[in-house]
Image 1: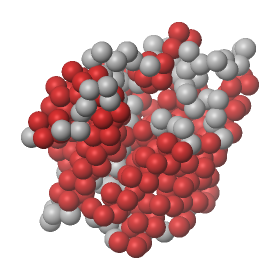
Image 2: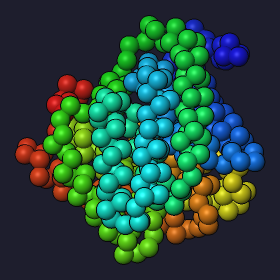
Image 3: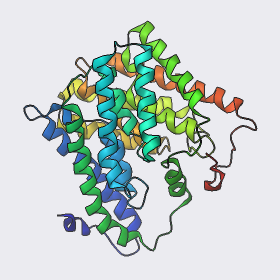
Length: 336
């Protein structure tokens, strides 16, 4: 079926054509997942972080995530098991939030898996109160389908861009998606998670720690010298807030389903493009309202609070780093 997508490719415009079709595939894939999740007993298939994996995988067929379909398929399943286990065996609170975060980070680190969005798969059950052991197999359905789709897409897309050298941004994104070799960023992540978990406990608003926030924090703290968001950490709270608003509006207007999914994903892609942020985990933010029992505008405010706390935390982290973060980001500055 992937041969059907050869028609947009034109000589001299292969890179832009591949990117255009990749965006269509991202939206189409998530629409299919949404449709499947609407079937009786299949609601758990809708795992929001699939948006991040699909977007980067399709848009960057030579990228890190697209090159490791096995990790894409199975890493989120393992973290999902950890998330359900902690949700079932521990009361909700700061210790449980910290424990599930550390377990998921350890799984990613020990497996040497570059699929950081898998962390979100483990945090989501605790933050939403999901206790069903059907959740990990449901996640496998979505990630397995995506992995197979990426394998097919790579066979078509890579020949079209083979002569196009990878740009600086692609090189940075590849290094961002590699697992960090050092662990010296762990204390800052722990402090941040405890801080944000404390806010959740005090306010009662669980979505202040929306699952993709942990992934974004992981990427920022673990790769401070190359993270493309470090020069503009104040932008992403606004971008995530707008993405959350669109997601809530889509659900309240059209209900959970394919139309709301398409609107949220397309809007998320456009918002990230406007803000010049390649932040795939942020795309999941607009889809989370579809899995909440009572989605409302308080979700958007929670996202803004959580993102702002992370931005401030990163400013402090940057000050603490001796010499600060280099202003001229280059792929060669990676030292984690």
